[in-house]
Length: 262
Image (cartoon, rainbow, N blue to C red; front, side):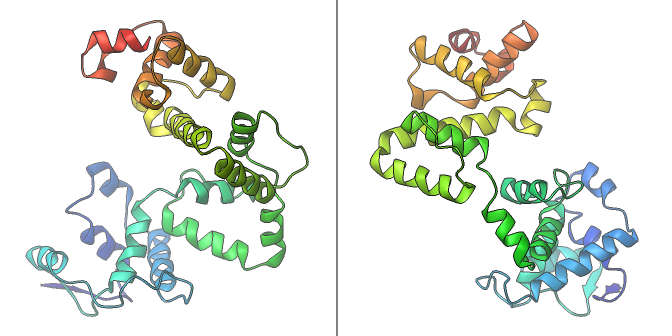
């Protein structure tokens, strides 16, 4: 039985640990390199950080994970804790939208393709400096927040910071809850149709807010209730106008549903 510990062959351990539930393309991308070893070391260090999610238990992993490893002939000299496993899993997960937003703001190279754990690591380093915290709080509003204020209030005050605009948006949501709910649905739709994976899967291009509202308003004018408009409906319309042909796969082959969306 082959034995691993934290000090040696950490990259091999990571690859072995996730071999059961990783796609083949993922496995190939996780080569036992010095870079990966460094990332595993960072993941384990993050687990020991006082600011790490304290709700994650410190107890060693057990049950199915250990059984799977034993079947593969792998024994851990020093068992990983649940908290450590959480951060190692993050090496196989894409950074969150918020993480990417922060990294892009500070012009961090490779932000879009960074994994969740490394994004966490770099963001902690950035925010360990007070000037970066201040710069983040003073940043201008994102287009989504501005669009939210425009949708709910019909206007937007220039010169506000992102923090001020978010507070204004939350206050507007309290004053106009139904309008705010519709806006959150619109925001979800916009993020959905512009998601990189979804666009690649459907061979569509990124769209602007102006173009988004054009398709959104067309669906509403065709009698589709705003809360029933889905990402699939939007994609059907976007694909049709961008490529000039129908995509019945959006509705599982239901041409009538697709034609209604277009």
